[in-house]
Length: 138
Image (cartoon, rainbow, N blue to C red; front, side):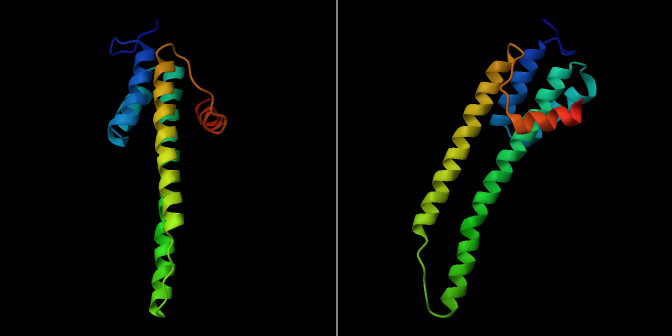
């Protein structure tokens, strides 16, 4: 098994990146991926680090886009309120909460599976993300 310069296996380092991305957020993950990109030589590990950050960014952008909808509806409601009207958007708010919960569960499951596959230096193919990583890493 190939080892990193820290003395742990490459697969374990990949798993640590995914699990830290899930647990600790951006700061520690960016530091770990920065270390991997600057110091380590294993291309698989570098690609997994970039893939983890890219996936985190995608989930953050999706959550941001979904979270913007209630704010826009509130603006509409405030404009209508100027004229003495009111519209209830409870159905939409409940739908938005459902979408947010689904996104959170998908992110959790995906990062756990990617972390577990990393122990054996495997991965789960995500076409759009993998194409971007391969485009910029090769």
